[in-house]
Image (cartoon, rainbow, N blue to C red; front, side, top):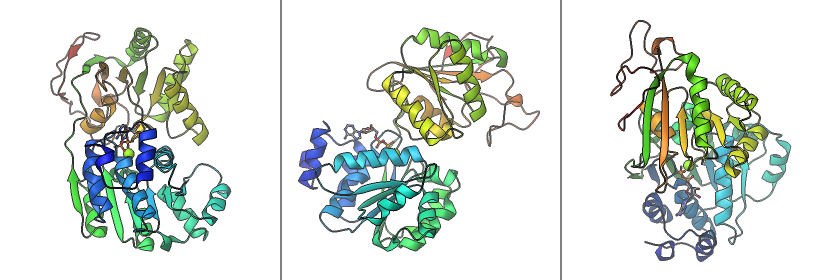
Amino acid sequence: MKFEDMEFSASIKEALSSMNYTTPTKVQERVIPVMCNGSNVIVRSHTGSGKTLAFGIPLSDRIITRKSRAALVLGPTRELVMQVKSELRQVNRFTGLRIFEVYGGHGIEGETQVLRGRVDILCATPGRLLDHIERGNIDMEMFDTVVLDEADRMLDMGFIDDIRKILEMVKPRWTHLFSATLDGKVAVLIQEYIARYEEILLEEEIIGTNIIEKKFIVPRQQKFKELYKYIQQAGRQRVLVFVSTKRYAEMLRERLCNRGVRAVSLHGDLSQQKREHSLEMFRSGKSNVLIATDVAARGLQIDNVEYVINYDEAADADTHRHRIGRTGRMGATGYAITFIDENPIQRGPYGASNPKAGEPRSYRGVREVKSMQFYIDRGY
Ligand code: ADP
Ligand code: MG
């Protein structure tokens, strides 16, 4: 199947071919025809599977062909909203659709100006959108379609009430939901707001066969030394380091920079501008070490890194898979290295998976190894 063979506007196809996109990904192949035909979709598919264009193409096509007036895309973070907007703009370079974004963390005046003009697709974080609504900057009735992108993440971040308010104001005729998971709060949201839909579930295929996973127990005081060793070993290859807190991210970055490593960080305490700068440095290769927290890195297109290092373990298996899935792409060999704390009970604030005091946590497939010995473990 090629994009050429699918039924949507020629102007979008032209843009796709100028982007060198010829073949839809699995999720795109399944979602595009269903959404183009006017059904609601609920889609579960992993990060990096191409969900943005899966909804971006049909949203645009329906507006171009006047089956829909305007669409609203809600996403959890500024970075994700910006990423979606850029991708939608790219496929709309020949269509004349007007695509804009609103998100917190920068001045609101510029956005207010933009909202005065015609908007065909608006990408927004829920909080900032409500801000505009309260200021009377936007007529919500113009939207007849809403996409909830990264729905699980938005709910994890506590946006449920904001999303409810928005959906109740828009009363969209079409509502689509995209998420890596569909249980818990996401299921409740679907039940409340999406009456009829087609469900498209893709199997996880995050972990390719090209990831070499190593986990080893590292005493807290030795973590930095170990990390530094890997960074040197990586040379000019890209290393993505995950830590559990914003504070650790900053501390590590400083320590590495003091040793002459060009490290940048990505976490929730940084200004919008700094976050973009970090991403840009890492993507362009000016910096080869990125230290990130899960919240900041979630959903962002940080792929094709040679090393993922879990300086702090992930809180759960899903997060772990999500982290290490950023390496070993497209046939390249990737290394996923996880430092396990010597004494998990004394670990920092980790959330739900934190063992109760006095209750040692068992690691499946991990035996007590003397520090620095590693072994390969493919099943987490
Ligand atoms: P998701 O939202 O599922 O995490 P994205 O939509 O961000 O995934 O897509 C991941 C990457 O794949 C992006 O860099 C995107 O530009 C690229 N991509 C998407 N669709 C295609 C395609 N059909 N052909 C080639 N690359 C694609
Ligand atoms: Mg996405």
